[in-house]
Length: 249
Image (tube, rainbow, N blue to C red; front, top):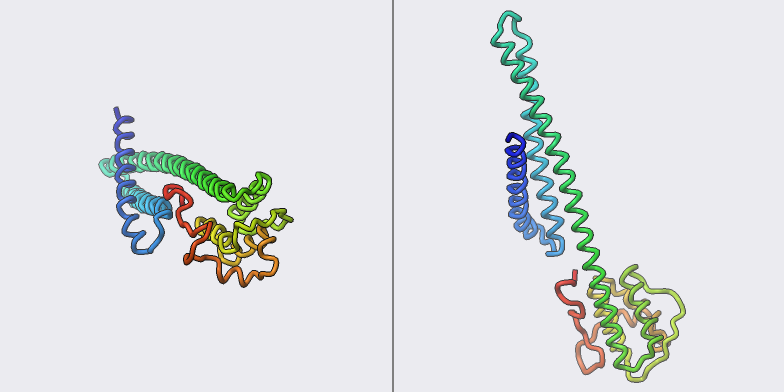
């Protein structure tokens, strides 16, 4: 019966802590101006802070009880009531320390479990996002009659680009197609870089390295200055939502 009551109390405290952390995280996020994708980190931080405050209070309580226990042992040995009180206080302190250790172990296990779940979820979302970007790449260049070998090379360049945040520095053999303009290729690169918040300099290097046949007489600075073109009609347009919003971290 006592064990069930202890478990119920522990879960009640955990539920209240999680609710408070969730409630606090939203105004904290607004005050700090963080993005929605960082909200889980803020919630975990609030949760940890509340738990630390809670356990700090427990520690102070245990310390006060310990001081009381020491004080109780100083009076004259003839006072039986005082001895009994001191014995009771000591026993309560031992029980409280035991409960505190069990709660700390439970909290540590739950925190590790939640962190593992979050990392697994994030990894799944990143993989889905990458697959969506690669599918966008295939669909884009198939409509211009690029060969499967050329599309494969472009996809590998894109994979390296978004994974390492730099251009793949190898010889790419992609023949120039007249139907595809420089502006379209720069728009294509910008659409992908936007999903991962990659810098203009790195994106310009990706364009130059991957589509070298189109930019033989261009420089990195020239490409970087005109990466995004929204005016006029172009085969590849600027599209900030090439990845579904649910997976666009």
